[in-house]
Length: 313
Image 1 (cartoon, rainbow, N blue to C red):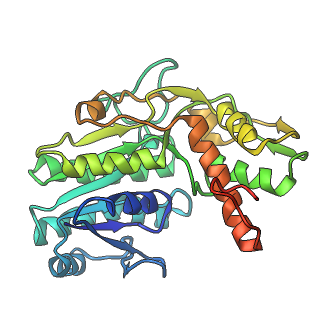
Image 2: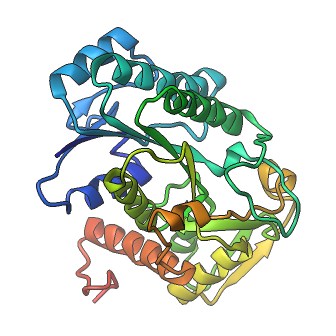
């Protein structure tokens, strides 16, 4: 089975491509605008006709869309998050109408919700910023295609963490800061009191595998999350423990605007469970793996030998 993974050189896309390679007989085509991709596709600028011709030539059995922009101006985010999925769905409908499309959405589409509540897929989306609004537009395009009979599903991913987490995320940024300041330094962060539902990137990859193997038809949208709201401070605590950090973590200011606007998010993951998926990786293990992976990569760059857990020997 050939699977085309768009955005395969990114954080989630990399984990998804790696996981799908473990499937018997699977051949993963890694696509994106990065030079590291097997196939150069810039979803923000593709046309329906051009992408349909490419898909007809490749003839993948499934397409997974991980391409997206968390930051950047309105043109970039609109192009990748909103226009891109619509073009992809239309191109698949024209060239390979029976090919399954799995699109990664975001919890940012939901926006603010009541403290203590769990968000089901039927909850009314109320995105509070550009990122959430553009991701919601992409989700609606794919969900509309599914409503018209196309084999398509959106995995609405909550806060992904784990090895390779980018510096645009709290976990990735904090891990890099802990490495920078050393074991006895001081790291300054914003307010960490907001609650988020975290999910390991490898569990997200397993969710993609689950829906690719599932029978048709699928629900149009499926929440992928840990199913439990945790204080963002728990991320800092777990990274401090993994790093054996003896310095100080200081919280100053209000933190990010999004955290201030959305103080609580927790997913109802009963739909995913009905499909046979469960989150497996604990927050502590996910962040320990992030820390040891970052340390191993830096030590390899510096020529320092490591043991099997990514720690300096």
